[in-house]
Length: 487
Image (cartoon, rainbow, N blue to C red):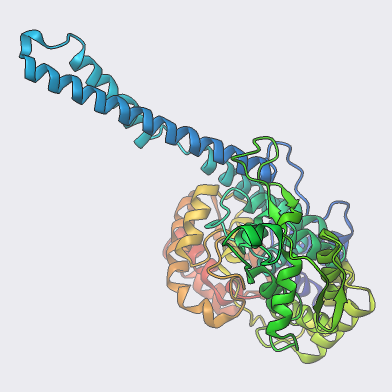
């Protein structure tokens, strides 16, 4: 840390949080590190308490019923259209005078439900639920004093990512149910919650994985799917080139057979919930990473996950990703080693690991070199202006910036290095300019630069803002300045 407490406070808000809000630099200037740690100590850190939000299983069932109802409406409308055409054809064959009196009326009525089904009056219930989850996430980011806990949510949600392209109505609930409760808990607990969550089982196709020698495997042609087992080893726990083999992947995939999801088609009360189905489970003991696990049903998988959480390769893998996310694309080796040691010595305690990140001198050294990801940058803009972001607009902006909401292109999540985001600076300029236009009339750029950057603002940045031809241009310059783009 430096000898300037206000500079350290501003850096803390950008590097570890979601950017300053009005008054927040001064509020934590007396003890920036203590303020970050205090956010982790608050009861319910990272959680969202909103009874109006549906669970992931409820949302999935509601979406299924809505799609089924719309399909039924389309079928009814198509039947009515065909019946109307038949009536009209009969009328033409008999002559106008002999035509059934209600032929034209029937045809007109038949087109109404078809048009209604093609052009709904507003967003579908599925879209409404998705936007409600986006709003809850944005609200949590907007009201956070610093946003350190929220940043940890975002980090772990990306580490254990699922995609809205596959599970559109489960992504928000998945984050609230499997990620948020564990960001200051134990890695082993988060790992178990994530890998057994229906969203992950569907996203990585484990719901359809069948042991070849199971009852279902003998009776059916569908077989083993290795996706979940492979990504747990490669992405979620050990990391690449950590000593596991293809045979370990296959054996682990056998262990995870039977981890599936209740069908909403057959069970409208519990559809989309987790279930262990022994008919799908590969029988017998399995050897994974040189340890044998007896066939004790669902517990076989839980035991493997518990051992994976404590594997010697995990601390370094997690520590490297944490340091890269918060500090630098090439994090200091000393910082990685320190975080890995704390993780290992505290049995994967994520609060202690985050605390070690905050108190490490290496985490505060150097200039702002880390380019913010699009979502972090947009939220920082909104916080600096004391505004709120509309969910629909935010979702559109995230798609334009290449970080579509809860839609990573692969199971490894969104990239966390500058090379993958620097080409999107042009799109950021467009969004910054549009946002500045919306708030310019009621927002003083001089106040925003003090709020958003304070002592981080260079003389060149302040001079450029002072010379701007309009409030809109000045605000755009604040949001596009290197000090605001980086942390």
